[in-house]
Picture 1 (cartoon, helix red, strand yellow):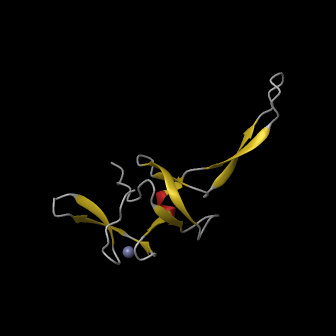
Picture 2: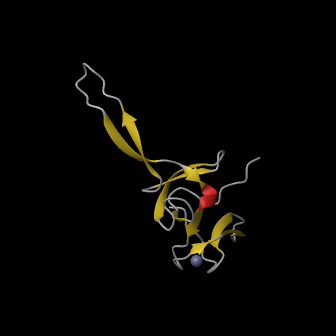
Picture 3: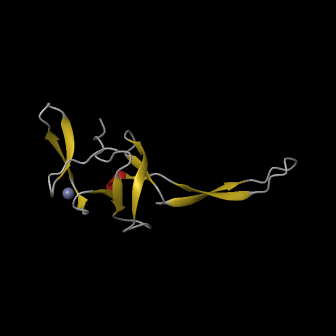
Length: 110
Ligand SMILES: [Zn+2]
């Protein structure tokens, strides 16, 4: 069983390594099974579209954000503004909530 990702959609994350190191972005897609995450504006690549004769469409390059490994990312805490490890805490109703290990604030999933 793969370890559960602590990163959720709409989280603000910081890139720790690779070409986009130091950049921040919003998570747009999460693939828990493969441990991959798509972040807005991070890991941009070009998809090369071939020219199709007869259809009047020229070949072009389309930029898209490619998925990258969740281990290269760290969640940013909206309340203290720092990168944080995600802790799981129990709420009064017995629900598991994600919280910041620095300020103990609950990380809201928008
Ligand atoms: Zn915090």
